[in-house]
Image 1 (cartoon, rainbow, N blue to C red):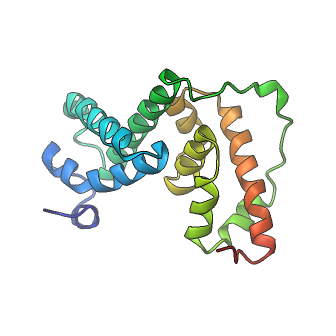
Image 2: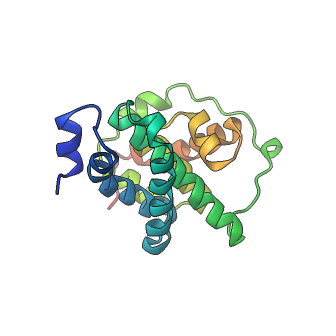
Length: 180
């Protein structure tokens, strides 16, 4: 079995869907577990996402491996969000209640955050939807619009929630990030 890292080093594109699947499924599943907080849900949504990708493979096979993996992760995020909506565990946000947030300086401060463990712990402690946004933004490096599309929310809501996550990380940065 080819590991994902071997697949990414081997080539920027894959020849077959089987190659793509083998090279990406482990990382996609790990992301799904973080998003869903539950291995069984993650297993189901990853299966569904790869089935959807297989159906679209003819149109996507020439794209770069990472582009296709991000596409699968977006499908996974959408399916996790759907699962939470169906189980009525998502709560509606009112974007009008959120004041605008100044993001100046936060990107630089986050670059100085050296401990993945601290970021991971902060994300795990968040409500489901904010955790999903944080994982897609900070760990998967999705853009605001990509996250909004995957989760069915507005870009401004994504920005607001990322700003709230950054605010939660700021005290950790000021203390040197030494929370264990």
